[in-house]
Amino acid sequence: DVKVTQSSRYLVKRTGEKVFLECVQDMDHENMFWYRQDPGLGLRLIYFSYDVKMKEKGDIPEGYSVSREKKERFSLILESASTNQTSMYLCASSPAGLGEYNEQFFGPGTRLTVL
Amino acid sequence: AQKITQTQPGMFVQEKEAVTLDCTYDTSDPSYGLFWYKQPSSGEMIFLIYQGSYDQQNATEGRYSLNFQKARKSANLVISASQLGDSAMYFCAMEDTGNQFYFGTGTSLTVIP
Image 1: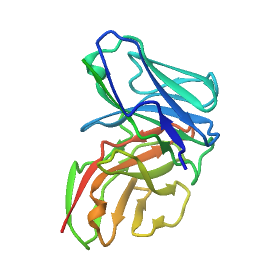
Image 2: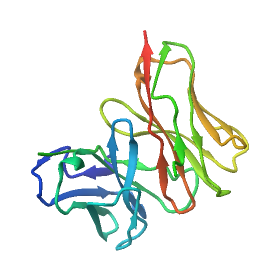
Image 3: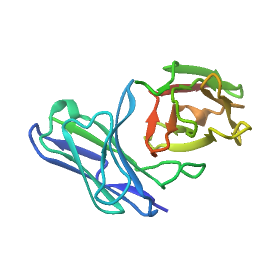
Image 4: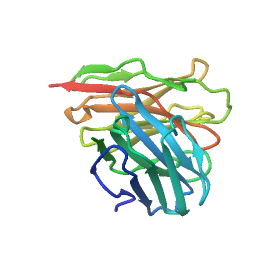
């Protein structure tokens, strides 16, 4: 019954490393999203994608990039990890269109620590 | 500009009592969707309830209801008969016509036995 999976629950990296966070959904959704969640700040959108090879910047794209080569997979890349990117990263997907069934389905999250 | 505002960082409620979690939103679009999610300590995000901007009636899902006041741009979540398992973070979110979602900062609800 798994719908959205993320490659790791916990990840520890060093400053300057290139980090890949992978997200896969099995619901054939058009839209996929990457958020980071920090205490007191809620969920902030990093990037989203509404189709294969399409991407849009969210509120906090600096220091991140994304890749969507296949419909089911959306990758978040930290080009050179920094300590201020220590956070919980949540991936989500949703179908296209606006309506009752457009709830976002979330993955379990990846807690990234950058040392 | 902040699209979703949740002004209650933390709330307490006695078990079996009702509680209202506040949410106001900001948009000039005529079409939008409003969602509430629950995030227990395990971290998973659980969809609770949806309200469309054109829906005439307030949405209800079991013990959850959404008090939608369009003119005031508010979408408060009402939880009736609180249970210990309701203790969690609650996020209000809005979806715009471009399918982008905007989340509030959340309200931490604690149910007291």
